[in-house]
Image 1 (cartoon, rainbow, N blue to C red):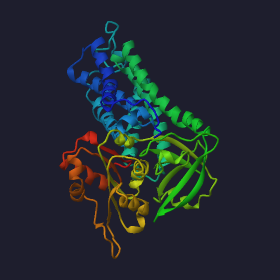
Image 2 (cartoon, one colour):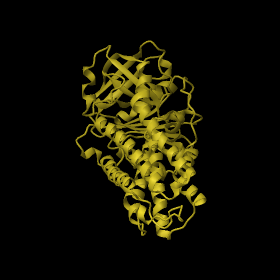
Image 3 (cartoon, rainbow, N blue to C red):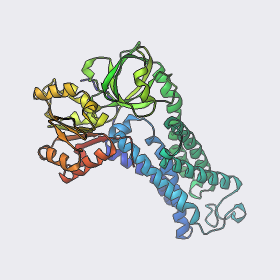
Image 4 (cartoon, helix red, strand yellow):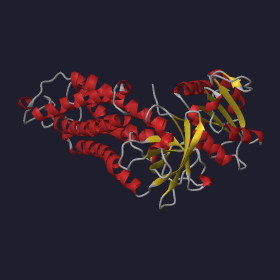
Length: 449
């Protein structure tokens, strides 16, 4: 099996490094400068440093760095991005500016007070950058939390979010360096600068370096066919290069019928297996955006593939058995893994697959064939079954999942989850009820409530 080799840090180490980056400026300030103000003023300064460091560190979680997504999973990376953004917003927006009790402005600073313990060192420029950063951070947070309520297309929102984040980082850094008492120490100032640099590296990679890399590895549409009701299977072939090394269960960001610098791209899971050769297959559901026109694309249309990403492939390593809990087009990564493992002497596999009706079942004949050959324990659940349907009916809810998965949970199998949020919530509730430990549950989602 071909696997894309990247340096992946353990999730615990990633969490520890993120926490260290967030706390380092504050702890360094306390150690090198020390407390000299009333405790509420020191708390206000500490919150400013924590919020600023959290905001700057958060930029790396928004990039497509496999050393992070491979350790955490894309769903957890995005969740941590939200959490850190919330921490920074609470610290910077709600608390930091309003806890100070001291006078501010250059007129209050004394020559015998090199650490500015007697007043806040706010001049016209530091006040301006602080206020602009305060307002911009509020807008950035609000538009992120309420993105679906805006009329912006996702690509428009994402581009503005990145540009505003870069401007916010520059404003916040200036304010912290000029106005901060701790930041007057060169070591603390250097730490803040070091935390800011990855923000701009992430933006540079997203807007320039990554598209340049994609431009050297073009793809073309080699085939397109209906895969199910409202779904299409699209095949891509490499042009002038050997293709992409990936593992079953992973996904890629794909650009279709545009140039490598286009911001219009979407994540699609591989449904092909590495043994299929250089050709990639993706199953794409029509979702009301550009995907509604997938069927209109012609063979030979240019494409660009940024990947592989994702961590569901880790389920394969040493698992005594695999359980796939999937809903709708979320069955795609499971299909890739089943196609890779079913022909081999692989671990036993159980697939619980829920969707609305029979025409929406993806790869039904192939999955039933593997089940008939004893390579797959298959349960398909339809919310709107046709007359004569012999399978299960209703929703793939927590009770149904717990009933089917209890033996696998007791046997130490690994659970792979992919589907719409309600199904994922039900699956996670069922697995908690079965006392399945977190390290045996792998999930990927791209929508959070």
